[in-house]
Length: 250
Image 1 (tube, one colour):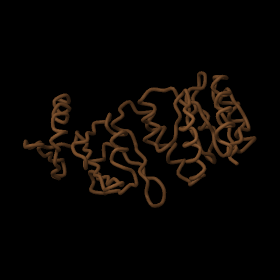
Image 2 (cartoon, rainbow, N blue to C red):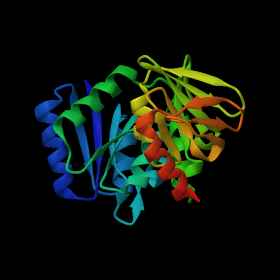
Image 3 (cartoon, rainbow, N blue to C red):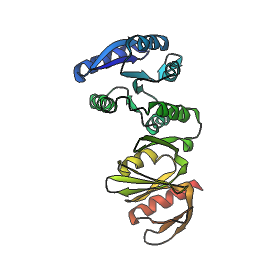
Image 4 (cartoon, rainbow, N blue to C red):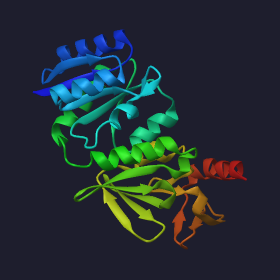
C-alpha cells in the first residue's frame, strides 16, 4: 500500500482527488490533505509518505517551495497543474509525472502504477534539479531533458541534440559532441516533446535540430546537411512543411 499526501490550496481539488484515489487506486492510502506548504511539510515529516500529489501553485507559494524544505527527497511526486504548455514541458522534460486538472481517471491510474514500479530508484534528486533549471530559464531552447540510461537518467540540454533517429520502437539520440544514446521510446514520443523547441521531423526516421542545419540540397524531398556534416533525407511529404518552417525562421 502506498501512503499518499495531497497538497493543493483548492478544497474541491483536494477532495476530488482523494475520492478518485479511493475509488480507482486501491493501492493508495491518502493519509493527509493539505492546503498550504507548511501543512504539507508537517504531513510529510509526520507520515513519511511514499508519494506526494503536489499542486504547482499553492496560494502565494509553489510546490517547489515545499520541496526545498527537504534536504533529501525520499518520496515520489506527481505534480497537479492547470499550468501553461511551457510549464508542462518543463515537467515532462525532467522525466517527472504530472496530471492536468480536471484529472483524468486513466491518467491518474497510469501515474500511480508508474510510481509503484519505480519506487525510489534514486533518480529524483537529479530530476528535481533539472525541473528547477527548466522553470528558472526564460528560453525553452535551454531545457534539460532526462534520457534513460543503464543506471538511471542522464540530463542533457536539448540544444546539444543534433538529431534523433528511429530504430524500430527505439530512438537513437545523437548529440553534437558525437555521443549517442539508444532509448526505449519511439521517435513519435520525442517528436511530441521536441516539436515546439526548434526541432522538426523531416522523415519517418529523423527529427532534426533546425538550429544545426548547415545546408539544404534540393531534390524530390531533398537533403539537409547538419553542422557535423551528416546528410539526412527529407521525405517528399515532409518537404513543404519543412521549407515553410525554415522560411519562418528567417
